[in-house]
Length: 111
Image (cartoon, rainbow, N blue to C red):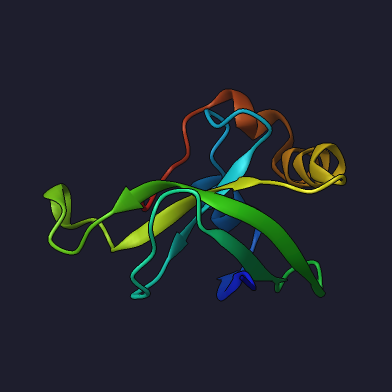
């Protein structure tokens, strides 16, 4: 089965920090979506990094679900774990963008 495509627009490094999931082994991202996805589904996240003027297709699998109507008014979405033979490089790239801020909790996490 082909992976489900999900768009994710991150405007700046704060957005990256807010959506990055360091607690997931190998790194991951929270992706707000209305798609109905299940655990372990393969996804291909089309990440647009506006401040960096870059786009990347990031392969992953669903490891976290935030349903509609979640507590604290959190948006519906999924946590994806980076996958593929480039997983380590993808993790390093995102953690490099966040830098030392990775040691602090994100200012406005959507998860």
